[in-house]
Length: 151
Image (cartoon, rainbow, N blue to C red; front, top):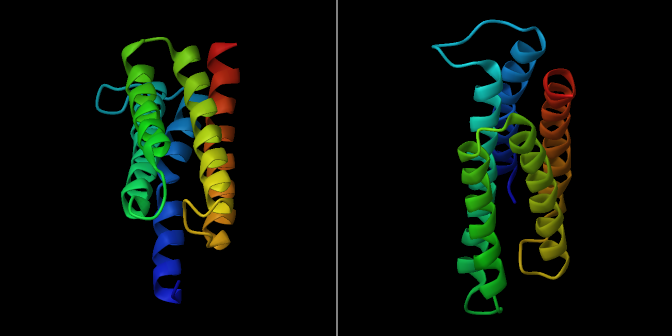
């Protein structure tokens, strides 16, 4: 992967943390609503969008590898993550929503790394190092809010 593309991937990845960090910090500081939406709702809805997006990346990888590898399971898995993300918004239960999203983020990362080792996904490991860091930060943000507001 070239340096320009690496820079863009890393930049977009870290920029994607801003809504997690901002909504988590606002929730922890017990600020008011933003545009009539609580920081907790912002955190949960953005988390659902990103979890669904990550599920979609599995779909894209499956399509890319469909000619050379069996990818039916990967296609199904991508849909499970998208539906689970949607469900976390529908259930209107912050504890369950954040809990399911944290598990979902960890599982997407697990499957991505497992697939990279089996060549169903690119083996470019620089990407997976940054994914571990990004996923860890997201889960910590959600865990702090979960512990502060839910428990």
